[in-house]
Structures are given as C-alpha cells and as structure tokens.
Length: 147
Image 1 (cartoon, helix red, strand yellow):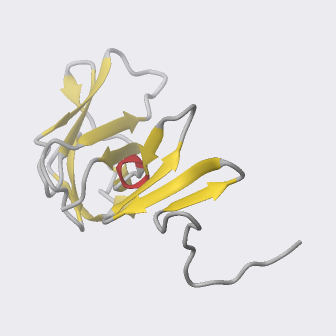
Image 2: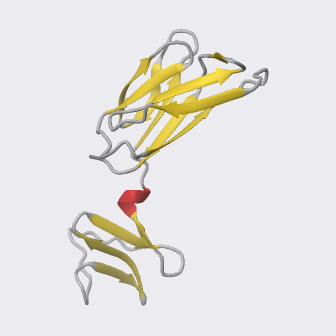
C-alpha cells in the first residue's frame, strides 16, 4: 500500500477538477465542492451534509441532549415539548427538520410534530393518544444552509 502526503491537489488541465481515469469526480469553485453522482449528476457536498442532529431524553428528570452535533442546549417547554437550539444558526427558517421518536408498544394513536422552525432552532411535540407525553428517545436532524 502506498501513502500520498500533500498539501494541495491541482487538476492537470484545470485547477478546479479532479479526474480519476477519464471521469471527473470532484470539482470546486468558491465556497462550493461537488462530487460526481450517478450518471452525469453532480451533487453539492455542502448541501448534502446534515447541519445539526440531537438525541433528547425527556423521561423523568429532563436530561436534555444525550448526544448532539451543532446543538448547544435543549429547552424543556413542558409535557412532551422541547426546543433544541443551534450553536451555529441556519441561514433561513426554510431548513428541513426530520424528527423521530420511540413509540412505546402500549402507545395508541401517537403523533409527533415539528413546529416553530426558525434560524436559531425549532420545537418538537410528542403525543400519545390525545395528550402530550414526555418520551425517550427523541431524535432530530436538520438539513439546509448554515448562516
């Protein structure tokens, strides 16, 4: 096995493309890095990254973040409701928040919702039946542009 150690990779025909064989696989420009996907499709590396994720435990004493990335704190807003706060805010409130929660085997008509999405964070609510309930685990991730 060989090891390559270097500081800069520069394309031979253009300084912004890296080609393996005859296939351009990576191209770069100011604040943008794309990689070749399926066929001729190009995928933006920055757009494809998860910008924040968090695992929150609400059961019993509110533990807040059990584990997280780009979340400084999570606020307990009462029964079944919590609000993760970003360390590095999003560029707009038009980011995408995915939320998943454990559903106990005895839960009936459970529901989860994400609301009040803002550049600084969002709120999550978990229901079992008609009432809001604390739950563990609550897991969410955010995709979008950082500010």
